[in-house]
Amino acid sequence: MGRTVELAAPVAPAPPSVRVLTKHGDTRLPPATMPDYDAACATYSWTDAMQGELDGLPNGSGLNMAYEAADRHAAGARAGHVALRCLRRDGTREDVTYAQLAARASRFANVLGELGVQRGDRVYALADRVPELYVAALGTLKFGAVFCPLFSAFGPDPIRARLDIGHGSVLVTTPALYRRKVAAMRDALPALRHVLLIAPAGAPDARIPNALNLSECLERAGDQFAIPPTDPEQPALLHFTSGTTGVPKGALHVHQAVIAHHMTGKLALDFHRDDVFWCTADPGWVTGTSYGIIAPLTNGITSVVDEGDFDPERWYQVLQNERVTVWYTAPTAIRMLMKAGAELAHRFDLSRLRFIASVGEPLNPEAVLWGVEAFGQPIHDNWWQTETGGIMIANFRSMDVRVGSMGRPLPGIEAAIVNHADIGVEVIDEPGVQGELALRPGWPSMFRDYVGAEARYRGCFVDGWYLTGDLARRDADGYYWFVGRSDDVIKSSGHLIGPFEVESALLEHPAVAEAAVIGKPDPVAGEIVKAFVALRDGHTATDDLRLDILGFARTRLGAAVAPKELAFLDELPRTRSGKLMRRLLRAREQGLPEGDLSTLEAGAR
Ligand code: AMP
Image (cartoon, rainbow, N blue to C red; front, top):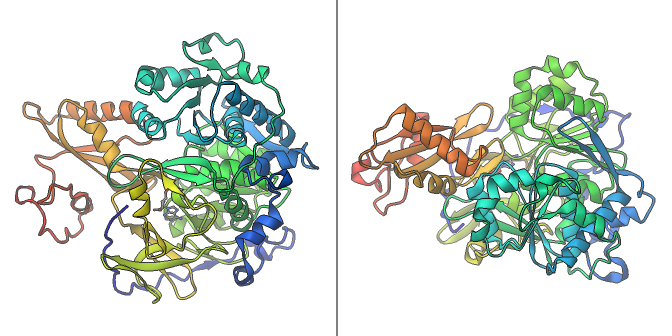
């Protein structure tokens, strides 16, 4: 990151002290997994958690995420328990037991072996939430390769950048996605040796040169696979995230992260053995992997995997029909449900639902309270990021929700508000003072590298702290309150978007001379991507051209990343040294004070 963060702001007004009683007093519910937060923090150790909760590979040969998630349950009393309840877009459903999941993942691992894939190679997935994606994830982890899921709504540019940076050697995708987004650039990806297509055996549309039908490969492969010794520090997962500048960052996580996945699922999401859990995130974003794949499985519970898109009525049907007990979703989704009205929620039998949590962007107080109106319980906000690999700060089941706050650090996590200036990091002890949120390194799911960008990785750690890039405050009771980002990244519908990646795509348009993008506040999505462009000579700013540039960006980047709005400017504001001043564009867009303009290039004022 290598950034300087503005000095801490003066003491902020006291945060609202509204508290909402959770259902922790309800004796019909199972007791909270962590009944006493302070006691849990006082005695917590990751080593004890590992020894008490996970098995480790047989014969002491290490720690493997897939073994903890599938094989150990498949070998015991949980073998016949439903691991994944997969809901297809066409309305059909498929239950996959732990025994079936372990066997299918073994087949996938054997396929990798037969293809000559090496341990440590990167296996990418570009697919909707279908069972094969989950089988590929666990099979890759068993094999000892690194799994990297990509969001299927990405356009060709983000896909190519991520395959390139991570040297992806295998891609698991569908025939349609392959044709639309990958085929044209295959020659430009020399590291990509194998493409495995998710399609029924014999499907004519999966007959594509240089690609294999995954079902046919799985059928031929054996369903037994001996997991090789796995060092807990061996790379396991690769997740891309964005910064203000430069290419996307590939955050690398190791097998040991499974301890954090497991424990945070248990403590922050209150997993109990009989739970039916639904994480609505796509595995292309870290939440959909840590909590959409690993954490529920290591805890041996049933996880709902929904292929379909957001639709309020259908979502309530899923909650009702699958008898979901614990639900993990995102603020944008909650705000969209709010728009549909609490009345709609009341039409469904959601009596099984006992715990709701949310992550990814600020959860506004109205949304927390709307949970009480719609579901008879508040929504528990929690905080983490791609780099942390798992939940770091949370409103827990055993505590009253402090509305508008992200909660308190997980046991085993040391958080602080710091002042990060050129001279180093200084911890701010005073409650209510704004600074950068920092974490003490050492938790198991901490990222171990940004692939191919070690200096960038090292720049995140200063004076024994990991600097998160978020600005926050802590109140006198130890609750953390999100303030904003210290950089220019955009959070739209929970997705972190790097301005540089979007600007680079805009600059490919023949009419665009300069481009800058910002996050524009939006009542539902949190922020939307807004672009500002200056045109090349000979082009005129017209509505048609605006739509053409927006359409161009959408084709290159995909709908989740592309700008939704675009404005023309004669010149973009830059510092004298040529750096884009997105901060100024943001301030102007919102009618806020423009701040210090002394470094602004004269012509752009
Ligand atoms: P990502 O790496 O894509 O998961 O994005 C992580 C970023 O999302 C964090 O650094 C925050 O800026 C934001 N974020 C995540 N959870 C929350 C939350 N509960 N409240 C506010 N912002 C959040």
